[in-house]
Length: 90
Image (tube, rainbow, N blue to C red; front, side, top):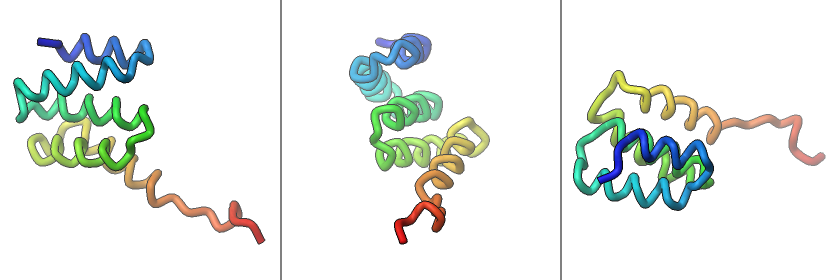
């Protein structure tokens, strides 16, 4: 079984597909681990899968409301809902 550190090392080295596979295996063994869900959310966000990342951040926050996923969820929602009318074409 992959450890959280293994997954983070894969993420840091931009081996995103491997990091996602490792996170999926770890979560299959520990589905209620808020930190693993948060970490998989980070991997998914880096892969451009924002919706899936938000799903994992939300699940993690439901398990641990004070964990790092709550901040990541807030930031993700800010990015998703960002609107700047000055960037629109006239």
